[in-house]
Amino acid sequence: MSDNFDAETLALHTGIHRSQFNEHSEAMYLTSSFVFESAAQAAARFSGAEPGNIYSRFSNPTVSAFEERLAALEGAEACVATSTGMSAILACVMGLLSAGDHIVASRSLFGATVNLFDHILRRFKIETTFVSATDTAAWSAAVKPSTKLFFLETPSNPLTEISNITALSEIAKKAGVWLAVDNCFCSPMLQKPLSLGADLVIHSATKYLDGQGRVLGGAVLGKRDLLMDGGIFGFLRTAGPTLSAFNAWVILKGIETLKIRMDAHAAHAMEVANWLEKHPNVSRVYYPGLPSHPQYDLAKYQQKSGGGIVSFEVKGGREAAWRVIDSTRLISITANLGDAKSTLTHPASTTHGRISQEARDAAGITEGLLRMAVGLEAVKDLQADLTRGLS
Ligand SMILES: *Cc1c(COP(=O)(O)O)cnc(C)c1O
Image (cartoon, rainbow, N blue to C red):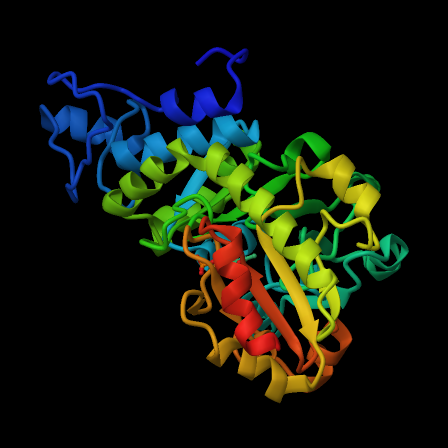
């Protein structure tokens, strides 16, 4: 595809390789394996002498279409699709790191990512030091000779803290470590970490890329040598957390409308955030599009908008927070985000419930905190739904 096309055009037209039937919509290739013309061709495919599909754990045309499309949107040389966002993070670590290596990670990560780094990887002698998402100097100070990877999410979940990608990429380059950014909250329509200096981008395609809460998926993006020779693809084809062709197809359809959805999510979230900020029973609102956000200027530089996630603290702790949730009739009580339908969660007792109280306190996840992934419903209907519990 031409580099001159805008993102919304690339989202519709990249990765389409029509079959002999000339289908307009992408074909869904539900097949475990691919047939060879001869024993010699089979041997050539397996040895890598001849490019082409072998077995869907390694590659599949529908999955490749998803990889091509997401790579075009992120401005990446290569993309490796995975079964979930968590397996994208795992593939990244297993592909690039070994026992004895060290990770510096943001303290404000998705709960499962914290558990993966803090508990599972530690058993395999990969240590992680957690630092503040926003204190750039702390990242420098945490670097050891064995450090291989910086890992962050921006905006963070659930407090929407903004990490300075450019500043951290400069520290990473000087230290000779890779910087990986989980770009789940913004999607490439609002933020392109590689253009800001990151080496790797992680996605949970389960969220905005699908956009309608249907399937799980993930991806790692970056330079071809890092992904294909660096071991990430090697881990995937050997260990097997592969994206299914069916899920890839669903996500391809989701990506077609990503631009207009992200713009609508952000516009609705901005309205909800402004309204919550004026509500007498709300003590604090976390949204990068609000001038009251501590990193408002940085967010404005890094992101095209504030995105779709608004977190807010209600007065009265857990009891008051749960009352807001339990009084909703429209907003879904569910942990997912990035769905067309609005969702509401109490992070302290759900997504961040398995991490220690100490870690929760350090991350600022209080008992009164609620996280809303603002959907595509009319804003006045969302406000009415929240008002019942808030008042
Ligand atoms: C959901 C999420 C993940 C994990 O993705 P799954 O597809 O659920 O495995 C990782 N990072 C962030 C920021 C997420 O929101």
